Image 1 (tube, rainbow, N blue to C red):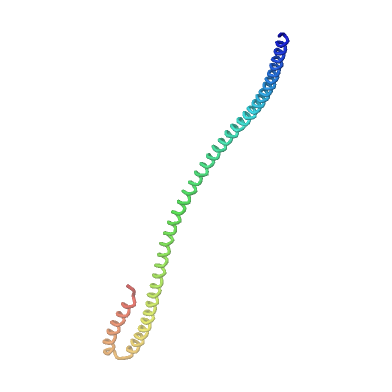
Image 2 (image 1 turned 90 degrees about the vertical axis):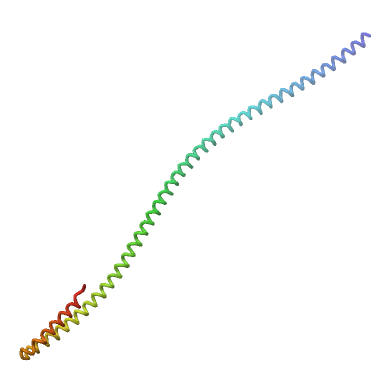
Length: 171
């Protein structure tokens, strides 16, 4: 009976040693997994810090880009305002140019009208000079006629001469 107990105790010891060995192996595996997990955690922490740093950098870049965009928008608004002012000035200048063009056309029209009137006046003056020459010749011829005949004709000639002069002088 003692020998059975011994065999049984040895068997149990052997089983407990195997269990202990298995437990040690399992513990070793768990420690390895724990170390791997710690390593992964450290790696993840580094990635997280890097990602946070990148995020912060991106936020700064975004902020800078927004500031630059705002500056560009301000400049664009300024240029739009200047363009609007330039268009208004151009419209005013165009209106003034149209007025000057109309005045020029009116001046040309007046010039042609006055030129025509001048030509007419010159023609009338030429005609009057011709009439005066004729009248002068008639008067010279009448001076050769005895005085009593000359008086009637002289008055009629003066009347005609006054009429011609009145027609010649512009209003």
